[in-house]
Amino acid sequence: MKAVYRTLMTLVITLVMLGVVLVLGASSGMSKNYGMLFSHVAKVGAALFLMFAFAYMPYEYFKKWSKLLLMSIVFLLFLTLVMGIAKKGASRWLNLGFVTFQPAEFAKLIIIIHLANLIERKGELIRDFKNGYIHVITWLFLVVGLIVIQPNLSTSILIMVTGFAMLYVAGARYKHLIITSMIVGAIGLVLLMSFTHSRERIYSFLGLAKEQTQSVNLQSYQSKVALGSGGLTGKGLGQSRQSDLFLPEAYGDFIYAILGEQFGFVGTVIVLLAYLALFALGVLISYKCPDMFGKMLGFGITLSITLNALVNAAVVSGAVPVTGITLPFISFGGTSILTFCIAIGIVINIALKFIKSRDVVAPNEILS
Image (cartoon, rainbow, N blue to C red; front, side, top):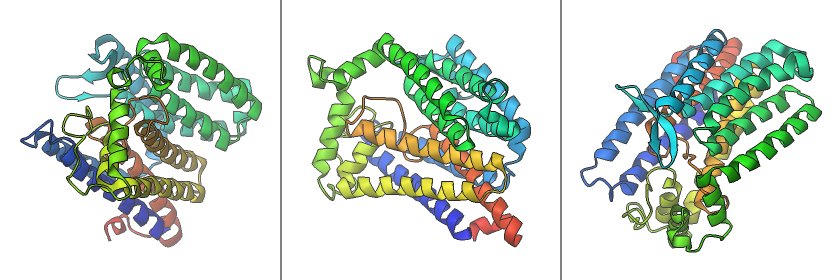
């Protein structure tokens, strides 16, 4: 197990450092004085500090904080609807004066914590619709509903998929999951076609837009140009051309395209394999955890991270319509990288708990 969590840490730190290198190249067209890079490096430093801090913090503490954390994020999500900063037709950012962040990013982690706590508390009752299942999905629907009306459909879908997967692993009845999924899917389809921005993205993805290069999928079009120009092995580090304002916001949601341009098909596949390895390690840690809360927490976190990575790669390669999903640990953005590093710190602590229960290993071995 020592090798497992050390490999996990190595993967995460490598992805974070790769992100710094890619942000440097992707943001050069936007910020010649490298101000954006310095901002990202500062956020990376804070994120890594928090990762180590949460690796030391016993994950059991979150059982006590679960309800308070959930109520706090529900309040912040509601506040975002009332006084959030509107960007591109959606109010997803909240400015508290001293900090600006996306509450929905923190909601991804907090709802996993609360669901894991509820699943452990309900035990076998999770198979009972009235006394177990409905209590869990009510909180899931509440958080997702507040994110949907921002509107932020992509994040809502990922949270819902993660929540249903946790319930499936926990032993919820297939009948309950299938019926609920069908209802949610029908409502989701209606919402996708109701919001203007999501409808336009779907039309553009299906080729119904008049001009593909002038459509809302301009980023998707340019990202495919970047991936294609990278070929098998890429143009080389720092040789990106699409980041010179051809690909809007290349340093954010579409940084995977810059990865492909510089390191080619080989580089993109290696990074995807790194995320899949992270998922496998996280599942192994969860499986070895002695208590249900830790099992569900570790599984939910690693699944959420992996889904974010796969969806981001699918968007950049044009396999699915454009979303606002970041590439974990790599994309520019404070809220995203802070949340993901905190989350992986919790998974590391789950691994350390198992090790200490078997070998009585000190937490400072995390740095050895």
